[in-house]
Each structure stands twice: as C-alpha cells, then as structure tokens.
Amino acid sequence: MLKKICETKDYLRQQVTSNAKTAIVLGTGLNNLADELEIQQGIPYAEIPNFPVSTVKGHAGNLIFGKLEGVELMVMQGRFHFYEGYDMQTLTFPIRVMKAFGIETLILSNASGGVNPNFRIGDIMLIRDHINFFPAHPLRGKNEESLGERFPNMSEVYDRALLQKALDIAEKEHIPCQTGVYIGVQGPSFETPAEYRMYRSWGADCVGMSTVPEAIVCHHAGMKCLGFSVITNVFSDDCPTTDTHEDVLKAGAMAEKNLTVLIKKLIPEL
Ligand code: HPA
Image (cartoon, rainbow, N blue to C red; front, side):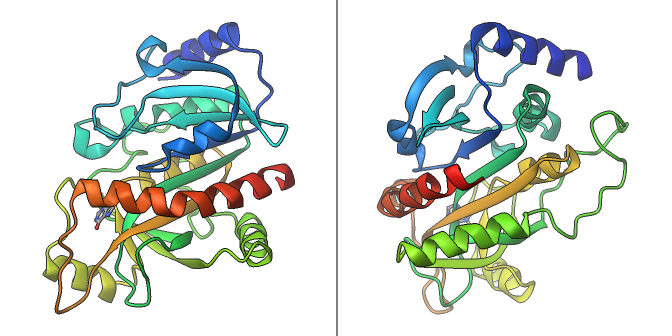
C-alpha cells in the first residue's frame, strides 16, 4: 500500500503544480461546486495510477486542482462507495494519497436521509460525530505505523474548531445549519421503517452510505476533518421515505446554493 500511495502521489506531483493544503470530497448532488472553481487541472480517475473508477450515475469521476476564492484546493468530484463493491482500503485510498500530497484539512460532503424528526429536506447538517455501522473497517489488517497508529482515539474525528467556524459563518450568512450524528451504513438499499427507528434510537440524526470510512482514514492519517451532510429525504413514523435516487439528486441540488456559499466563505479562513 505504501508503494502505491507513493506512486500515485508522484504521478500527481508530475502532473500538477499545486500547493493545496485543503481537499474537498463532493458528494451526491453537490458536484456543481466544481463549477465555482477556477480550474487549474482536472484528471479523470481512470488516468490516475492505482485509483479506483466511479460507477454510479450522478457521480462524476475527476480529481480537480483549482482555486476557490484564491485558495488552492484538491477536489474529488465523485467518490467511491462500499456498495459499489470496493473494499474499504480501496475506497479510502484517495484519502491516503491526499495526506502524502500534503493535504492538512479534508472537507467531506454527502447526501443523507434525515432521521431526526426536526430535520427537513434540503437542510444542511454539520457532522459532529458519526456511528460506523459498515460491516468492514478501513483500518482492518496490519497497521502501517508510518500512516497512523494501531488504535486511534476517535473522540474528536470532526475538528471542533473548524465546526464552530463553519457554524459562525452559517449564522452570519443566514444559512440554516443543523449539527448532528451521521450513521454510515453499507446500502445500497434505503432504510426500512424498522431500521430507521433503530438508527434514531441509537442517537443518529441522519443516515448515509459514505463518509465514515473516509473520515476514519483522514483522522488516522492526522488530517483535520469537517463533514457536511445535505438532508435529501426524511423519515417519519407514519410515512416511510418513498424517495428514489432521482429525488436525492434533486434535493441535493436545492441545498447546493447554500452549501456552496458556506464553503466559499469558509475556505479562506482555514
Ligand atoms: N439512506 C441512506 N443513504 C442516503 C439516504 C437515505 O435515506 N438519502 C441519501 N443517502
């Protein structure tokens, strides 16, 4: 794995001249944030050695180097999901490459289903904490000490100072923002009413099929992590969600304007 990380980092260093210290993973329906970027270079995942290739409709697959508000960024336009069939090491490989490249702060975004009864479609939730309910763990197997420690402390995966900064900006910009717990599940089926009631009783505020493996690896690697979740559908006791993947994309687009403003204001302050 070390050799592969090094190989991919070396390839990127040959391809781009970037001093990006911040990376963003754009989730479902949030791809258009890339339109706001002053793009320096975009590389399709298929051209990057050792990178997996995205398979889901609505997910582009490009690693973009560009500037937002004058700040250099590395942006993953499209991510890899466990439900696509990748193992945990493969789908979090880009996060390892980010660290090797010199990234210090990672912003993760995703679409999720609201489990908290106060949540509405189109809400933005800042991830305060997560529950890892995936059936596999990205740190399983022999630990490579040079990448991070065997038993990482998980009491603050999502950087509190960054979270507060994002909340302050949201308030100033009059962007309604929730905070809460994201439970990561394997998918690809949406939740049954019994499952969503269980997640709610466990303390989750929203449920989604990504982010948790990436956040674990980000934290293990010693980078700061911030997570945004766009609530694209909600559950209620008498009316289980009837949403389709298309509805999720539509609601993602709705919240995109606010999330774009928030990220644009936040980036220069990192
Ligand atoms: N469940 C899981 N993942 C999701 C959902 C959901 O309801 N909405 C968007 N991603």
